[in-house]
Image (tube, rainbow, N blue to C red; front, side, top):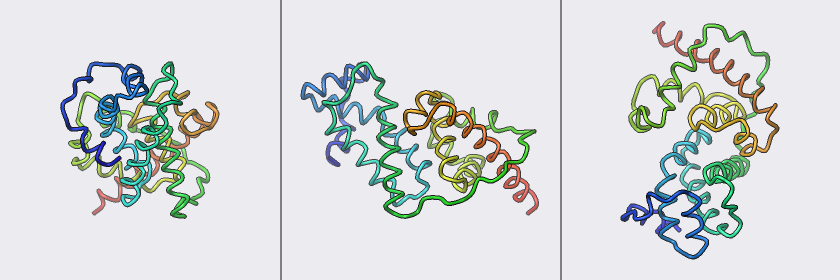
Length: 212
């Protein structure tokens, strides 16, 4: 499996095919199509797991396990279903399993969230999460991105994961509900709580940096 992923840097004759076309070819036994899928999603999936897990020692294992399941589950793929949400659902489930096994799930109480006025969350994260504006590896090196990552890393798991899905990966409410196996109403309320919590923690983090 690892060798297949590493070989994905080879020439990409299928890069213009849609996800559904690639999966159809893979279902028919074309492993070059699978390598193209790996190439297409490896960077965004790795970034997602890095933020979602917040434990670097687990990221590589879950990354490999995600593509392994995709590799072995080709027969169950519905070509009418978008590949990206399905792939991220696998990744999210694998990540949660890894956290449970490591007995490191967050037990932080959310509590009462203070008012979220004067938030600049959207303006800041829209630039960071744009697929076309700034490459992820360049964003990672910026001071603002480092602060954002630090604040998100210290949030409770259920709030952290909703922010990662919504702002860094731009999933819809329906897609997030499917990935997290929760109702759409819960997605909306949790995201609202997460944004308010982020605004509160961001204000505190930036204030403490400025005081120094």
